[in-house]
Length: 285
Length: 312
Image 1 (cartoon, each protein chain N blue to C red):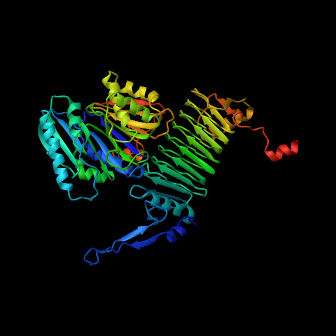
Image 2 (cartoon, helix red, strand yellow):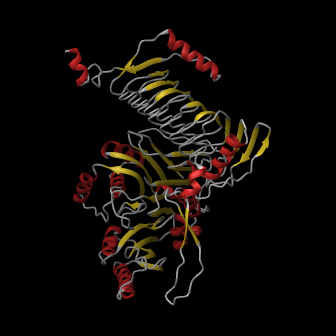
Image 3 (tube, each protein chain N blue to C red):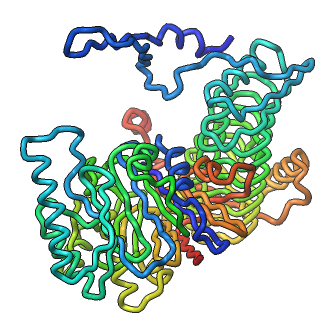
């Protein structure tokens, strides 16, 4: 069941402008839609354009609006029991494929704009193109593979799952990351892993200044040059578990032989990690 | 937030509908800023100059009793003052009630001419140059392009701006692009905030420059033009700006034959770049570029501290 569709109908109110001109004659009534959520596209009706073939389906997004593309995708995976969806011509539009909370495979044949496939839990997503800012934001679980470049803030607040970018990424990759793994085959920009709290990042190219700035925890592996470390980000000690992780991820996604990595972790000097809460201090004393 | 865009044709240019292309790009980014829309368009060089003049802020239909008379007087004052300084006026157009476009021949001091025209009460010179034309007004790209007939503008390169006002008012004076008064044919659009704006404004004012708005972006144009007047290239001036301008920014600067972009050291503001053999297009979002190049394309985000310049 589509969790949004139910209240959307209730939330929409219609109003009539019923304008009267000065002479008092009624002018043509034009229905004005009012939506308290401030949506640009009010029409969330499902277009029903996909060609369904058993458990797989395909549709062309070229002439559909963003909401209709998402509505069609939700119909296929929630109501029609489709397991594999291919979407043609996403045309770099924003917010496509967001909020999918079931296991399925979705392929985008083209580039996405900002906030692509955010807030997902479960799906396996393949993007044969580029993505804009904040791809896979707050993913809970699942896999997102991007064949080309990604913008800034890729995997922001990621909580689980794997995000694989085969090209380069912009700045602040995995900002506020709380879990999961981000793999970047190309270079990464400044402040990669900014305020990271848990999870792993595997960067095969060079990284910009401020790597791991203000990180709390988690691990960043870098194969290329590091322009500068951020505050409280320090080299970490390599263990067999690190080798195992990297070998496994490279094997799963068919990325070839892994290069040699350096490991970076939190120095735990920036915050008073060993200081006790007032209540705890009382107990010790 | 603001949306910025730039396009430069590499195939010689000159015969391309740059006005139409820029409108499509800006309209696609309307959600980044619906307050006002501005264009800096470059036409193939001719002998004469074109001056775009704003006579008053967009009136939104609120006319007082003196309105028509005041505008008529302003128009004739501008014309009279230009002739008095020796301008050979070929054509005067009035695309809207509060704007005026003058085509003319002139071989005197441009700053003196612009100063004299701006001295007419309420008047602002938006652009002046042999190739540059700046058009800016309230509303989205389709509205502005329709009012000023930009669909038929043939040119070589252009930049544009869809504005969401943050630091200053919603009016034409605070809309982008900014012309580097009084340097002909240099203009800038900017997405971001400059934190040492007041310092630079005072510094440049002491050097004799005038500023018409409260908008931080206005100083970038004058800053760059002054560096270039002292002999730096566009690229050198832009590299220097990364150290001398504080804040977060992505800005695009254009001159009569080049287009350059610069990003701050934090990479805080977006930019997507597409380069091909026949054109270079850049915008805050890829969706804008796809309105001009309607197919799957290879694009990327330039990194923090990037300075790139293309010549046509």
